Length: 355
Image (cartoon, rainbow, N blue to C red; front, side, top):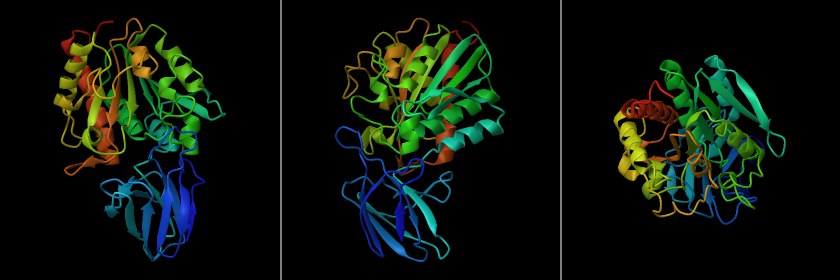
């Protein structure tokens, strides 16, 4: 049995490997402090039952995410503790991927776009040379800017982005196009970095200094004067409490009533096939960790650009909880509901067909 991390998104430090047990921990690389992301490939374990154990409690409620192609993911549902899970390999299962959560491979976005006739273009090269893709969907004088993976490991945002785009294609908002940047930290996504709390600072604390190429490119789009809304799509902390939910990070006292209205519209738009959302889980400015950004994040920077109606972060749980379990399909459906919620918001504000 061998363990491999040399693939897009791979991340782990393997401490030991025996016939029936693997111990490992996340590879923090340039992350300040601690973080929880991991992903690795197991080869040559067919027919065995193997225990996987971490030094930290970074296994989710439903075990590991498991895949055979880095595209389709399920939960093992074999968590034995907060730091361990088991897996019984089939007799012909010789190559299996395990991860902290359901990864979103960059090739999925390209395939998604191809199937829907969307042209994916080159935005810029990241600092280490990885191409950063983007897509413009639809036409109109107004622009909805979608961004994801400011923190490389936060994959749920890309599924949400898929759903938003899918819903837009079925029911466009009048005179409004969508610009999607799915991998702001493309270098980190490919390398399998944590991305959060990078030294000297991460991409979502870079909007004043703009040392990262992806951030500079997003700023250029946001500052063109035609942006109606900016939605920055993230995943929260590993687990527990609000982190098991879908929630909006409100970032403006001045726009608080509008953000609360959006939350009500989003909640009304949730379907049975989506992740549950309750606006009471949204976090107001000045509450808990939602303090002191000083325009360094995407949401706080863009909220003050003239003409921008809404700009904030949506956090989507990695796992969910019993009765509200994350799956790839449910994440995508949540994105569809998000755009429908924004449509309702525009209608109630009298803005659906006006600039």
